[in-house]
Amino acid sequence: MKWSVMQLQKHQRNGMELDETVRLDEVMDRNSEIRAISPVHVTGHCDIGSKKMTCHLRLEGVLILPCAKTWEDVELPFNIRSDEIFEWGEYADESEDENVHAVEGDVIDLQPVLEELILLEIPLQVFREGADDVVIEGGADWSYKTEDQLREEAENEKPKTDPRLAGLAKFFDQSEE
Image (tube, rainbow, N blue to C red; front, side):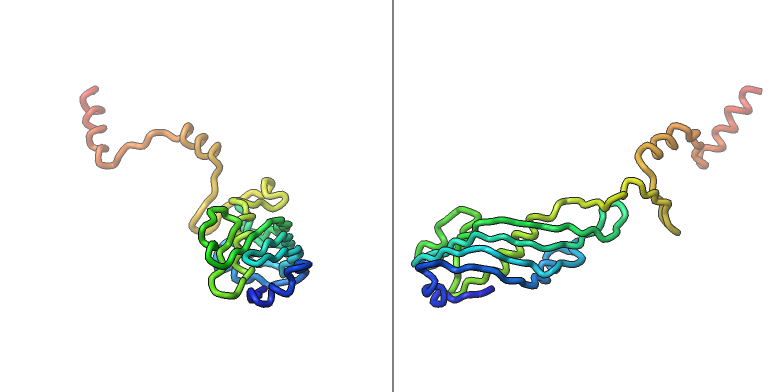
């Protein structure tokens, strides 16, 4: 979704409607947690002025992320609404608003903005349905224990004697005789 500033000038009067499905596979390169992303349906309306374009966007799609507990695939549907402003010309770099994007050159590229909106929607952890019911046993060289299991083991465990001090323990046993 790229447009030149000259192309946009013909839409100054009525604005420009958006209804397009785009592939944003590059978002997987920016976040290694994303296993897959469906084609993203982008709809909205852009109002175009002489030095700026305001887009009212809606993005719909599905991300595939790993479950934080079982590492299985979890589908995370997203429906994002955002207003983004693109400015060009002499005052383009002066805005401190995060939704205002300065246009470098004569081409407006919407893809990096769409990718950023999707990345901001990803939660820190996702869990699949029934993940709490899954009992993880462990593998060949690893095991899984809850905090309660570790605490219980620590309470039941006898203090072990350091093998380097075993001779000293025998010394005290001899003195009692």
